[in-house]
Image (cartoon, rainbow, N blue to C red; front, top):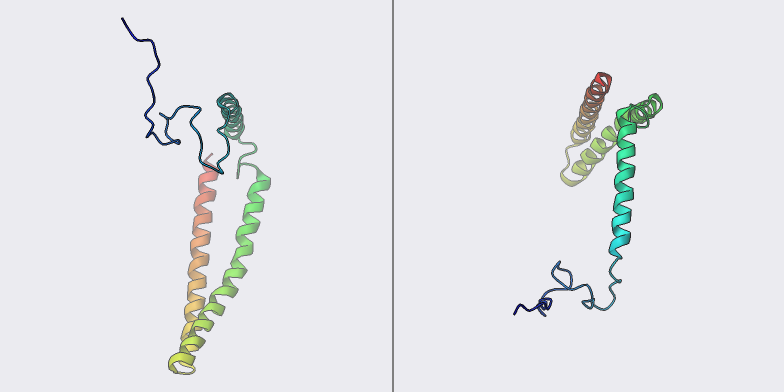
Length: 143
């Protein structure tokens, strides 16, 4: 005769595992388990919204850089960053050169070298920024 009882869960099964029974007690201070039906409803809603967003993006509207307006805003952000880099690079280089001068001496060469290295680093960063922008523009124009 077959036994129709549900198998007993192992008492050593941790409360967070999938094998733990639904009514397993949670540790003190933990919130109650979410309702499975509500979680499934939210997942379905999320998937349908993602699907709708994907169809909008495939049509070329409302995507991150798809519309003309968002591309212009991205360009403004990129071109605003250039003067900040041109200021920050030499300031940091001069500051490091000045700190080295205070620590080990060598005035005025350490500050001069630090300033020149800061200017070089700033130009390098601007070159990388504009090269990446050109790649992105080329990629977006193919769409």
